[in-house]
Length: 404
Image (cartoon, rainbow, N blue to C red; front, side):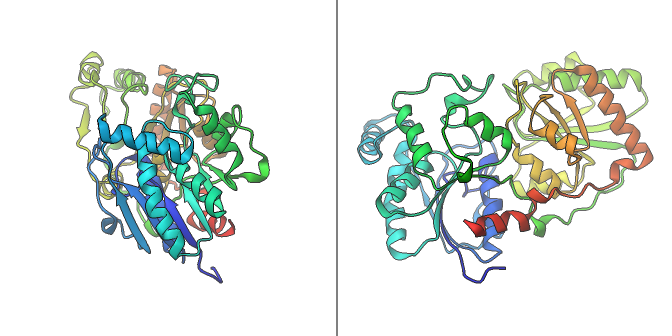
């Protein structure tokens, strides 16, 4: 595919070890790029906390030129305060977590002096500080990725304060850095791009839309045929996400279909009141909670279900592209998106990339769609495969990174 090997310095605190949505997105991209001739040095962070079990690089089969995992202390003490102060003098700005960037920069400089990189690729905070410094000091091409609004205070309600929300002291300098220094900005969706452009001044020629990759090498799953419908939700449904409307809709579905059994399971972080909700909607015996497992094991479990459910928070506009969308596509599962009526997942529904959709605020719409899914299960329509949208394919995404 490539006439010359691309050499990338990939700075992603959330990558290895593999745990959580951000690291899954980053590691899948690393797998795609490394299997297509890219030579990559990764600087990651040793996460000392996790909601999910994690696994190491070798378990996922990613071949890197080098991997450096840098651990930092996150508790407030003299050392962390000192490192944050030093980060301020190094980058001209500091904020919670910036001390990792200070230590990562030391390693990054060593790698830059040894390697002739085509570009430095930053993924999640505070990697942007390292990218900024390398751009300013060495003139390295900097490709900045924004998978979520940044700074975090700019998240839409109910996650954050919205585009006009007040941010931490010094954020003006951070936003100026974000606007001025990257050679390219990557967003996973047009909606996130448009949202962030409400407070960032970036020209279109510096913007690339690249969604989360669906790995071709892993896209080999088949849909098993069951005697009853099986639904699975993976990941976090704790606040500000809320599974109650889905549970209420399932309760109403059972009231109308008392003899039907649907094997429904949640795997991941649940809200504290989840057990109470099951009692409220008479679902205690009808819904399973599966323990959190390593990422590759979660894919194996997804493959044993028929429909993959996504429950999003009730935002005014759904600007996020959930990680699990590409995972579900990779497993060839039909997706039931319970999301804002205006948003990324509704766009994918309108385009035909997602088959089932209901507004997350509308219990009766969710119940009606559950009935449609069940009817399609009975007729076999449920198992008609939807092709992966071109923009999500490994070939398309690798080619975009090859052009930077």
